[in-house]
Image 1: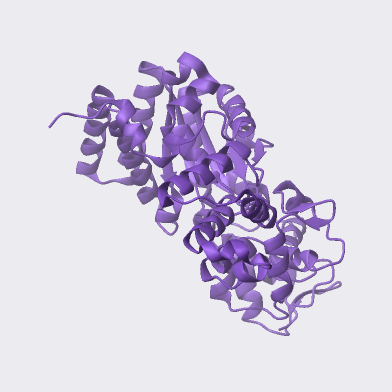
Image 2: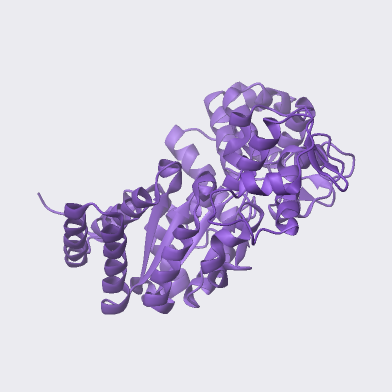
Length: 433
């Protein structure tokens, strides 16, 4: 059977169809970090288009040529969806990255390179030892980056799902690879908020110099991408939407990728909708619209949800991700949705909130919940939360205060006036339900 060429392979992916100027500014910023040998964090609301941008880099030759010219052939992007391995061990993560690297080489028909890396991988699997597999991945990157002179870029999609399982060894391994490949290795972390706000600083200490301050916020609206999506949906459905309905949908969704697509599909499947005088209520009655809105709300902490319910909301993170502008919610559909929900007034179950907590935050909250209304001294908390360390001697009161502050931001309605995680001056902390 005749093998497909690179162009045919890329055309099998939807992102290859997008115009070359899609997400132009954001891709330029990301590539500016990559060219310097640095890594970057791509931050946005859920459904705003991080996956789409990764697809453009991985599968769209026109986009790569637009930004990199003929040098695009020296950049190799490896897409890795971390939601598939969110609770796996570091050894499993290494295998996952190895397999993703092999898949990327096979898809681009880099046959010779694929065979070399595949042999390294198979040799490592014979031993099935974590150190051997980790060493094999480093050897594979050495071959591609040093011998073949490719710039290898790992695209870590939905990385927030893996954050609760993160260890310092993960970043240590990335640093080792970076130190060997030098400027020909980078990572792009796709997240709903910066890593600095999600994990303890010491976790990424080894890799911090390559990622600190390198943040690209993805705007909600991208005109070339939305225009293409509208024309594509109309072509697939063999139906047309009038400009008035399209403009109303774009106004209600602010061009948010997932919300806009869902609303457009609803309108195309139900022509009568175009005659409706109240599309807001109509869309809010649709399960798939509510699902997308709920996904956005789950990416926010209780204090942020409370801020959105205030008269003149203001919050740096919400403004950075484009959800707030000029003290107003930018997505009218989400603003209507927020009015319908009530921020929880008491702590939900530990299982429900654990996905958004780091390992230390989880341990702290668990210990506090297990000792309700009891004043817990600082030494007692430090001994329990940091107990797996060889010694807790280096853990300062300041480290505990910072950890408590981050946890309050995630579970309290108002972190500055907590009602659950209370400070008892001169004595310690207390949890109240």
